[in-house]
Amino acid sequence: MTSYESILIFKPELPVEEVDKIVSKLEKMILGGPGEIVQIDKWGLRKTAYPVKKYKEGFFTYLNYKTSPAVANSLDKTFLVTDGILRGITTKIKRPRRIKVKKEKIKVAAPEPKVEG
Image (cartoon, rainbow, N blue to C red; front, top):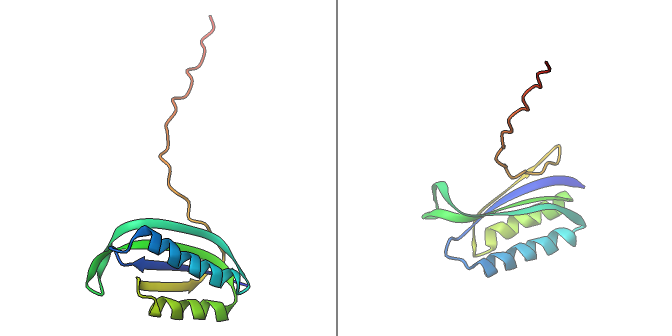
């Protein structure tokens, strides 16, 4: 199986339930492929760098999965024909990775050295 990652942009007025419904449909395609899902991350409503089909923002979703190339091609075709999806892009990755959520670093003061005497 080959590792892939896809980023989907959904229409901003689409209800969250509809987005979940489309993502679960894509999950079933991957798992039935045969394949496995590494990570699904919903980034939420964000502005796009440029207008996509006259929309300046969209609901972004990230998928990281392993499957055969045939299933990845059928997913790309599904991205094109699904009404709620504005844009979808899939890339093959050489080394699978997980996107980590950045946490703020908390600075802890070093303990003061004890002075004897």
